[in-house]
Image 1: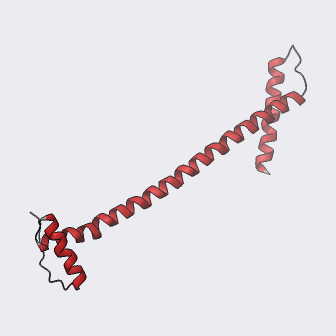
Image 2: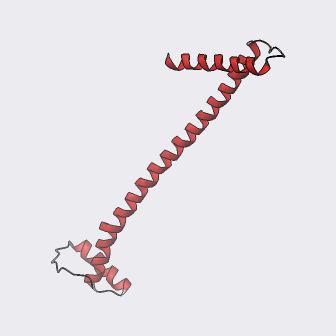
Image 3: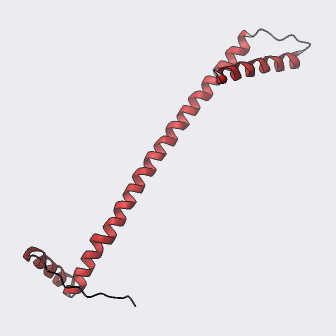
Length: 119
């Protein structure tokens, strides 16, 4: 059972008529109609406003995540193109030491990347 607190309210004529009309429409007592109206305004509308704020923030976060995903895809393609160009202009591999030379080229590439990151 819920605890109830008795209040005395002084309403202007317009508010009193609106409350009386609401109570008659819904078949409620004035007290119940006033309680429902106050709950709707003070509790439910506030919860809806908070939910709307949270939704807006989540939408902004989602947009940021999508933008970062696009940026990462662009960076990946850029790096891939750079690696292709690097290996193209690094010179052909000699047939007898293909693995050793490929590893040396890749190590040189990683050294260049590391130098660029440090700069």
